[in-house]
Structure formats: C-alpha cells, structure tokens
Length: 212
Image (cartoon, rainbow, N blue to C red):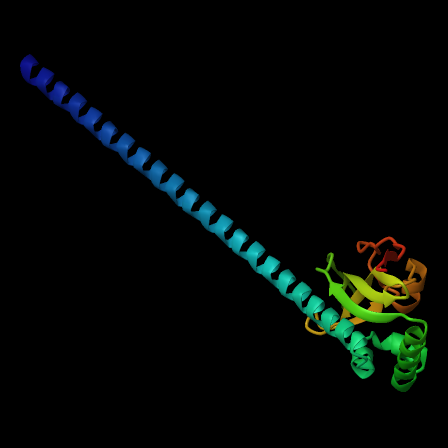
C-alpha cells in the first residue's frame, strides 16, 4: 500500500509539473503573441504616421510649386509687356488701390516706356523656390524670391527682390504683391492678417556690372 501511495504521489507530482510546464509554455506563448501584436500595431502606427507626413509634405510641395509657377507667369508677363496678365496675377486690393485694371495697365505701360527711354529694359527674371507657407484666417501666404536682370547704360543690373503670394483657395490659385520698397507696415495696410511667421527678406541694393 505504501508503494502504491508513493507511486500515486509520484505520478501526481509529475502530472502537476507537466501541467505547470504546459501552463508556463502557454503563458510564454501568449506573452510572445502579445508582444508580436504590439510590435505590429506600433509598426502600423509608425507607417501611418510616415504616410501622413509624406502626404502633408507632398501637399506643401504642390502648393509651393503652384505659387512658383504662377510667379514665373507673372514675371514673364511683365518682361513681355503683357500687362493685362500682370494685373490678373496681382492681388485685387492692390489693383483697387491703384485705381482699377485700366489704370494699372496704363501705369505699367508708362513706367516701362520711361525706363526704356532712360536705357533700362528687362532682360530676365529668375523666380526661386518659395520660402515657407503660412495660413492666417482663410488665406495662405508665401514669399517667392526673385532676381531680375536688366540692361542698363554701360552694363547691366541685377535686382534681388521678392513677391508676396496670397491664395484664397488653399494654394490652388495665387496672386502677388511686388516686394520692392515694401515694409511690414505697408504690407499690413493691404494684408491686415499677414502672418508674423513669414519674415520679409531684407532689402538688397541693386548690383551693377559694367560691360564695356
């Protein structure tokens, strides 16, 4: 009987050990599955975050590209004396303050004629990448740097300036304000909600290069 009880106890102990072993293995397996599930969830979140960041960067790039494209069109229209197109791409309140479309076209034509009479003509405009985008109210703003080359008596001039771009439809269409001789106070008279996060470029003196 003692032998039978000893055998039964031994089997019980062995069975208990096996059961506990299986429980331990099961718990370890559950732990690994939980960790694997957490890792997959984390990877998914990171992937989604990276996807959202990439989508945002692509959207910003497309809006900047659109601003640059229209700034180039405005500059080309000025050089080719397509003054109606220049007015189309000028911020409407500026056109209004000048006295309307016809008045602005006349002013641009007269200014170009007077410059030519003094020996100054537009040669080319380099439109550079916009420097930042900022939203204020329902408007989107950007700064588009430009370098204008002009023929001048005895040489040529390079004028470094900028355009302020304004969009009322989140970057689809843009109009511009010429930054020449602008100060922040002057900007605020036309763009009351111009964002402080956009810094106006410092004014640079024209660079003259003698050619003869």
